[in-house]
Length: 328
Ligand SMILES: Cc1cc2nc3c(=O)[nH]c(=O)nc-3n(C[C@H](O)[C@H](O)[C@H](O)COP(=O)(O)OP(=O)(O)OC[C@H]3O[C@@H](n4cnc5c(N)ncnc54)[C@H](O)[C@@H]3O)c2cc1C
Image 1 (cartoon, rainbow, N blue to C red):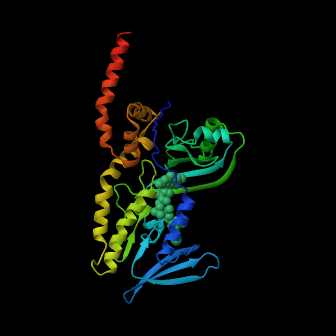
Image 2: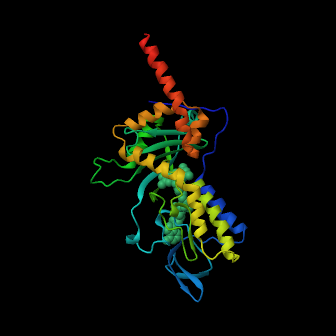
Image 3: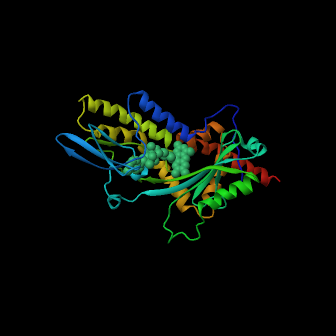
């Protein structure tokens, strides 16, 4: 089954994550901050009303101590500050993915230069999905991600690389490509958004508090939205207007709970419960009657109410199709 939605207008951009991170680092410096790379947070302690944070420099193993009024846990799925030991962490829904940046023949690139392509179903990526996005002239991002399930319960899982090769060889049919970069990472999402958002003068943002949407694995925009909310409360804390970050936690739940709870339920149905692509096929069959804007609203803005609103149109088309068939 293949379904295409088109728009005469640009509906978004494909982000170059490396350039984006470099931009953010420059912004920190522009606002008077310092960026230290190659340092690992190893612990913190409170003494005389101060928080002392300890880092290890990866180059020479030296320890560096910094004193701070507010400590932000932005260590992603590691949640390195909020959980001291691995054993302290609760169960998470986990996912893992890898993405290649490849350079392909101009004729291959031109075919896909304006498309975002998602591959669903067991053939392309069991328990997940794979994708091809255009990055820049002759360069495509090709990736695959899936939910992590206990290998004892799921047999015959092939390595993710196999599914990326499948996209390149069978879909793109590129004979002469070069791999420019390979990267991969992990998602750990707290079902029911039960993360630790704050503790004394520590506040957590981004994947550390599951701002990543587990249905699509999209987390950059949402991490930034959450960080903007955190920034507001950090300023209030530094100005002495609040003495803890509990209101931050409340506002984050207000912003994310409803949409994220529906997304995680759909993710469990799609990535864990769907057998033989029954649900996947039904979903595509349903979405194919929808307008591009509505599909974008559902997939990228989680406006799930559009699904039920579309039901009337879907059913009436199905019934009309059925009557037509009866009429021969
Ligand atoms: C394969 C894959 C593809 C994805 N594609 C997309 C996409 O197309 N669009 C999208 O929006 N999202 C995507 N995501 C999700 C997105 O990457 C995350 O949601 C986002 O990066 C979260 O940002 P963050 O800053 O919270 O955490 P991260 O980006 O994970 O940053 C955390 C940082 O903390 C560092 N760190 C961890 N522990 C320590 C420590 N002890 N000391 C110092 N530093 C530490 C890490 O090295 C890392 O640099 C993808 C995820 C994966 C796995």
